[in-house]
Image (cartoon, helix red, strand yellow):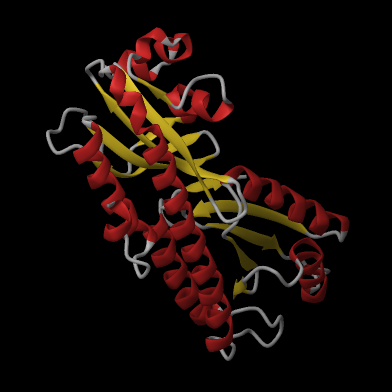
Length: 287
């Protein structure tokens, strides 16, 4: 039984590997994947394809709108189809033009708030037997179990962030009470490690202040507090540079927050620029 293979002490990635290998051995589909969604990206976290039938690797990013899973999540296509090309939305999907997909199974993985984290899904180039669709209850159960592991790990990460805040409390800038460069560097390294474990990269907003003779640090801090309160970890890296860790924000929302803080500063007569970047991918998205 799969329950005997899933130990309570496993993390999400370890449980994912057990689930993928179990489905690989029981369903007959060539490729099984754990994916996550972020904005318009559909990201492969882990996969099991021992015969390398498909050119899909962990870390690959596909347009969410190109995927079968998008239609499955929207409820406009089934969670399992032994003959996927008989489903119009599947047959018309862009991914069908790139990969030979004759059979499909996919169900959502939800986070602790009931929001979509990603999917557990499998595909095969061959049409499956009528009995194939009997696997759906097992696949749904495994996705719920993975959601439980995900929730536990997210809760652990929340506790770890609180611990980080306490353990690094001496590494702060006395003029703002935000983390100084050394404290922030240590905190960000720990956050990057957490992001890589879950495949759920944390996003950071960097705000650069254009100082002039009238600029007051107290006004900058006031604007940041008005925008972010005390819920987020903030670093004061240089006189004119601040960073805010927005681990629960997708990149599009981080950029919105960047515009918002820029507007708050502007109302105080302070000019600024902002950049958003991802701790896992480390690519910047300029304002």
